[in-house]
Structures are given as C-alpha cells and as structure tokens.
Image (cartoon, rainbow, N blue to C red):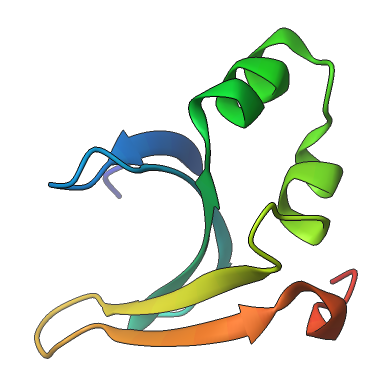
Length: 91
C-alpha cells in the first residue's frame, strides 16, 4: 500500500490573475470533485487572517456563485458546473 498526500484545500490564480480558493468535496476511484470560489484580493486576505471563515467564504461568495469541478483520476476532460450560492447544501 502506498500513501500519497495532496492538498484538500488550496488557493490559486488563473492566467488573468483572478484568485480562487478550492476545496475537495468528494472523491471516488474515478473522479475528484472540487468546489472553487472566486475571490477578490481583499476577500482572500480576510479569509487568510480568519476574519471570514471558510464556510462563509464559499456560502456567501462575492459574486454569488461557485464552480464545481469534476476531475477524472485517469483520463478525460474535467467538467465544470456553476452553482448559485443559495443552491449550496451544507454537505
């Protein structure tokens, strides 16, 4: 049995310089599902400082939506679905 470790929560920037916070929300043998929330620089700083908690960071996103990204483990293209924050469930 080999163990591999990877982040379950991370921040990244896209080519245009926009910040996203991503959290792993589900994993099977075939796919990993991530939730990405776009963040302004100010909001990101407030999250990092603890002024805003992670739940609020995702549930009350500045733009009112998040992205669910399903990434195949072995092959295939990722699937991105935009979800309104008020449609998110607590699980």
